[in-house]
Amino acid sequence: MNRLSVAMLLLAGTLVQAAPPQTVYRCGPDGRVYSQTPCSDGKALSADDPRSASQQKAARDAAERDAEQARKLADERRQREAAANGQQAAGFKTAPVADAASAPPRKSKAKAASASADASMSPPMHVPAQGKAAK
Image (cartoon, rainbow, N blue to C red; front, top):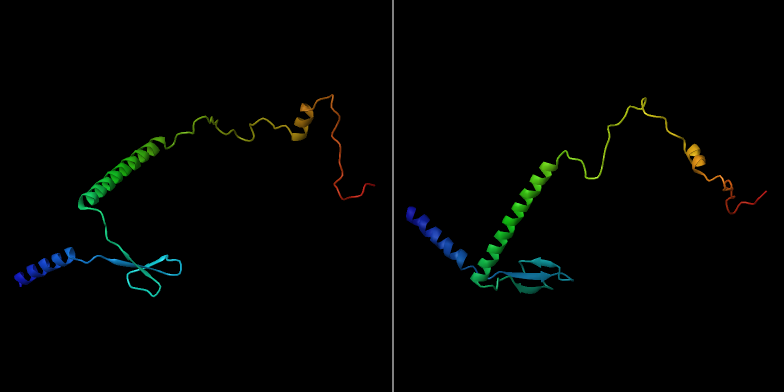
């Protein structure tokens, strides 16, 4: 039985390595649907990787370097966010909110407007809305 399992593993290994190139079919009226089975209006596309083994290894190495750099940047961002947690935004000065009873009274808008109005200017005019007849 042990010989049989070893033989099966060897056979499976050779089948994986000797797999034929995969064909993908581009189907649909706009060619936006991909399928592993042939379709009536489809075009066969080869899904082979035309790159050499050294080019594939270089691409894998570059992807690993990019992933490591992304992990480092994410860790740095998390550290900065943890350090900034609870800090106030730059340029904003906040004072504690005073109790409403102890706060000084606010001036009304009408008084503030009349106080800032220039005495040499005439008072504002009332202009009737358009479309209404004047009486």
